[in-house]
Image (cartoon, rainbow, N blue to C red; front, side):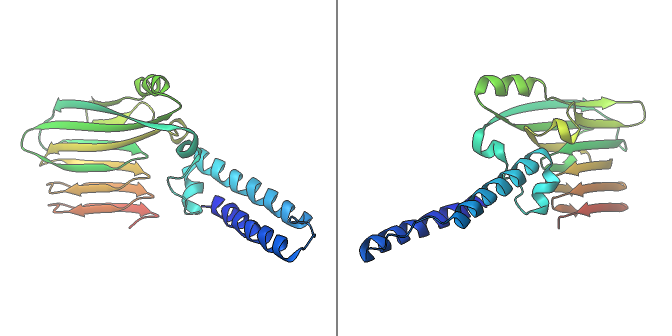
Length: 219
């Protein structure tokens, strides 16, 4: 919200202008110190906003969260993915996500069902479509566990992408979740569960088993 400082300053200057016209005051409307302070505010505010865009942890530190340059200069485009895989009950399922929420609930079948809502920030629809094609999720099996994640898991590769995951798994499943910058909801499963999150709320309910939760900067 740092641009509000400039707006307020400008409104005060308009008031000063009409006051000086009414009183016949011919002194300069802008002093050298005010101009220097204005330049300093613009440079500092722009630097913080740019840093928040490059590293969301900076934005969280300054309490500006989702506010970044793309919210001003880019447009948001939404895309959707659907994936399904048969899994044995009691399987370990690893979930990795960045910049988005994750909602995990039990399914009535022995299948993983993954619904992905992707938000891509781009200058236009054509660019967003190209970027969306480069950002995809998958359900894979390495022989010991199943994994849900994207091909853009690194923080540096995800600045233009947000993803909200809705996942249905067999009721008897062991979840290993690692999420950043989004809310987590995990409910009504049987088995030991492990959840790690940063910069988001964690809500875990109705688990029949051990639960380990690690969270930073969130309720």
